[in-house]
Length: 211
Image (cartoon, rainbow, N blue to C red; front, side, top):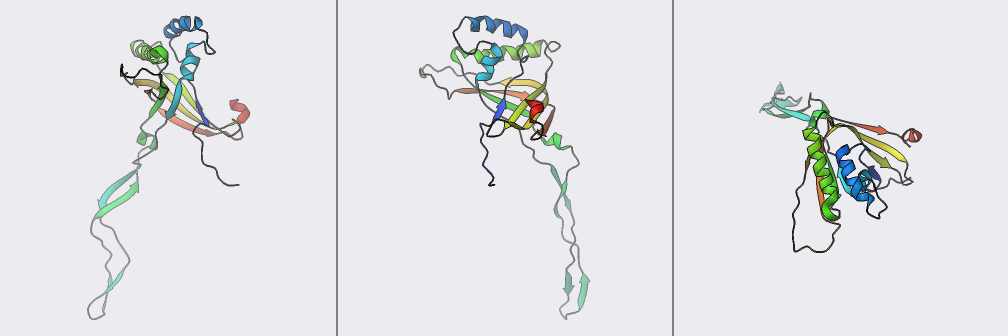
């Protein structure tokens, strides 16, 4: 079987059901209940507006030190007499595996991109959520786990990325521009989260476990 290029749409992320503070949930639920729509809960309304997400890679796991190096070259003098092994090289950068935990070489930043909904409702839903989480840290300390599912062509979960101890970190601003009068799904904003640990499960043999 030939290997296939990945499809970026075969990944799924949604916020946990208890992501929104209860005060924010109740406030926006009243408005959504008055609107004729398929999505009528605040968390579903928020998840439906997700356009994409990204997780960081790993970089700078090696260290470099300036050291003398050696070789095994045999050298001869002008008369052909062997000079033996002259195996000391001038100082140069030598690369080694670093001693740091690879986790320390990850940016630990998770970014979610949203489209702006009418009235910027999803934006201010998140804006208020950020304030509640900072101003009431005992009530909303962090999200224990964010889950990103990686799917097969048939929709089965074949991989799962877990971000643990997730904290809401920041949100983009809004540019209000009177020259833009048409609706545009390309207009987006980012919300940034910080996490303390990351894990990956290859779940090809445990599909039932995650269904």
